[in-house]
Image (cartoon, rainbow over the protein chains, first blue to last red):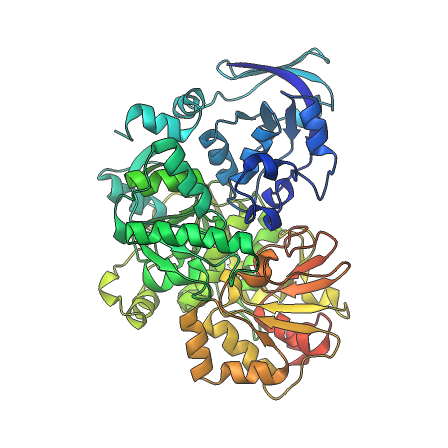
Length: 169
Length: 417
C-alpha cells in the first residue's frame, strides 16, 4: 500500500489519548462523526476544520504517540478526520493495536522528526518500509509492518479480518 | 533458558515455550468493559460480526463505573443499553455504585496464571495477584467477547528489584512515581514490568496493586508481582483461596533491562502538570495552595488507603479553603470502611464521601473549576483529565494527599505528621 499526502501537523512526544479526544465527550457520543468535531480540541482548536479541509493528510509525531487511556475513540476520530496515516518516532502499545484494529495505517519511523516539517509532502510505502519526503527530497526507511498487522489493515480492521477468516484458526 | 513471569503464563497458555517478540493466539479467561468502552464493543459485535452473544457468560463482565451514578440522560441511556446486553447474555453486571472495575476484578476474578483482558488501560492492575492482565480497545474486547481468544505479542520484560524498607509515610505510590520519573512515560513500552525484591515481598496485595496499576503510565503491557503467601491470603480473604497457585520468575530469567532500587532512598513524590513522568519530591512544592484533594481511584481507593487517610485526619479538620473528596474503590471497600469507623472519621474531618466509582479521576461526576489546582491519588494528570483543561492536577500518595488537605497546601507528610 502506498500513501501520499501532506503533513497537517507535527506533534510532540507523548501526545496522549485524552488530548486526542477528551474523556468528557466519549461517554455522551457513540456517533464517531459527532465525536470527531472535538479532536484535539483542548490543545489545537482548529484541528478538525483544517483536517477536513485537507482530506488524506498525514500526521507526524514524536515518541510514545497515543499514550494513556485505552480509548479506541482516539484512532477512530483521527480516521474520521480523514487522516490517511500517522508516522511517529514510536507509539504507545494500546493505541498501536487499536489503530490496526480500526484500519488506520500507522508507521513507526525512528528519526522522522528531524526530517519533516508541516506541509511537507510524503510518500509512504507500507510494504517496502520507505518514506519519501518529496518536498525535501529525503528518504527514510522503517521496519516493515509484520505480516499479521498488514493482513489486518488489508482486511480493513480486526472485525472484518475475523469475519472473513471465521475466527482465529 | 529461564522465564520471566509473563513468559511462564503465556507458555502454559500456549502449551509450549514462547519467546519475547512472538505473536501468539491464546484463550482469554476473563474479559470486561465499562461504560466508557462497552457500548462501542457491543456496537462492533453487532455491526461487524452480526451477533450480540458472548462466548461464555461466566467469563465476561460489564461495569457502570466511569460515569456513575449517571450524571446525565445520555449516560443513563448508555447504561440501559449495557444492562440489556448483560441481561440477554446472563453475564455479571456491576451497577452504579458497585465500584471501579479494577477493584472488583481484583476482588472477584483475578488469580495467578489467568489471562485477563479489559477494555481499559489500567487492566494491568491484576498482575498484583499474578494474572497476565492487559488493557485493549473496545473492538479487541468485542472480538474476545465473541471468540474467547485474542492475539498477543509475547512481551520483553523489565525487572524492577526493590530492596530495603520504605520510610515512614512513604508508599508504593511514591515508589512508582520515582520509577516513572526516571524511565519516563515510554520507558517500558510493550514490556512486562516485573516487581521483585524484599520491599515488594513485604507489601500487601493492595500496595502492590498501586504499582501494577500504574505500569501503563510507563507504557508497559503488564505489571506483575509474584504470587506468594500474601496473594494466597488476599484470595482467601475474598473466598477464593482455591484459585491460588504460586508464580515466581526463574532465577535465570532474561530481562531486557533491570533496575535496582533501595527503598530507603524513596521520598514522598509529586507528579506535576501535565505529565505523570514530571516528578519531584513533595517538599519542592511546599506552600502551594490546593483547591481540592481527591482520595480514591483504581490506584489508591482501597481499604488500606482509606484507613491511612482516616488515621491522618482523625480528630482534625480539612483546611477551610480546600475541599476533600473521597471515593472508596468498591462497595466491599466502602462497607468495611464503614464497619471500621473509617468513614465516620473522614466525614467528621470534612470529607465529601461519594458512591464507589471512578468519580473525580476523569471529571465525569466531579469536575474542577477554571484555574483550580487538585492534588489527587489517581494515576493520571493529563491536561483536562478532571473535566477542565484550565485546571492543574498534581498526583501523590494517600499520606501526602491527606496531610495536604489539613494544611490546604502541598506538604511533605514526614515533616508535619
